[in-house]
Length: 185
Image (cartoon, rainbow, N blue to C red; front, side, top):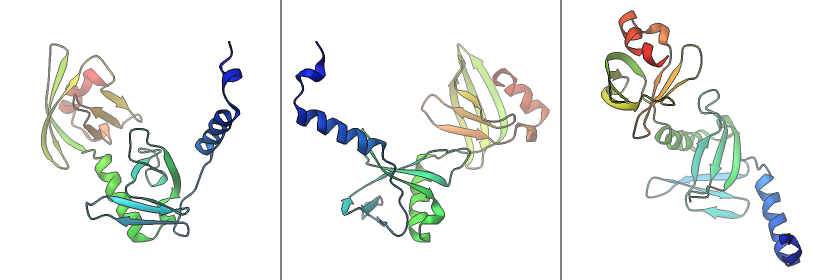
């Protein structure tokens, strides 16, 4: 039997309304949204007559256009989108700085400046590197997916714990570093 035939009209209307709300794109800017820092160091939002005690900030295009099309969402597991900031420059400097701070925490990605050593054993690779944040050791799965080529020379590496590391230009690595990395590119 068809489910819709047994649903009350009010339920169907609610589903239609919720679907319409999900598909609607709402643009946030300095004229219609007020961002404030909370005492706990998070960010709250006042928008369209509603107050959000806390928001989550996501980059829609984190690698190719990090300051445009910023998604502002509710912080729960559903992460329902509240709206989109087309460009951070659409906000005042204080609000843009708050949101940048939140995104820098979410998208913390140290840049690998030198590869000291890479050892592979039992399906894992053990990296010993220098980053723009200091020396670091991390482990990845050898079975693929841990190293993603973003461009011909740009790599993103995700370790077992979900931490991300970036090599912005493999052309700047020495030949011995490239040899160590050869297994992954």
